[in-house]
Image 1 (cartoon, rainbow, N blue to C red):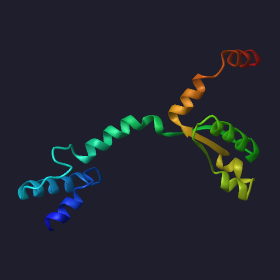
Image 2 (image 1 turned 180 degrees about the vertical axis):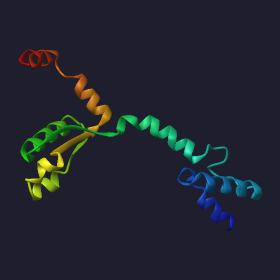
Image 3 (image 1 turned 90 degrees about the vertical axis):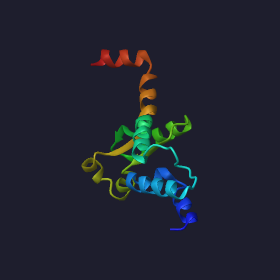
Image 4 (image 1 turned 30 degrees about the vertical axis):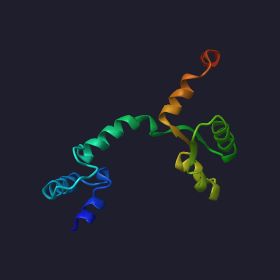
Length: 134
């Protein structure tokens, strides 16, 4: 490869495999070229670090619904509050609502950190009323 091709390949070092990153690093050093990955950690080490930070962005199922209307209403309430969410399996249930029970219903999915925030904001008197009814 020419010097320009090597520098182009090294513009996004995090997109390379560890093996390709090491090979590119050795060749860049041998040729005396500067690049973005000089002195950077291996891509696998960077991705592991990002995965730990991103644990709160994992999708979780907040609720399940048998029918579409209630799912749409609660999804719109969350969206109005600024919470990103989506309905999983909603299109399949629209095609044939009898599949809803077999698929586990329509799932309202939010980020894990949003779900934790919603659950922690639950009013105390609502918790007490639920306990009294049982």
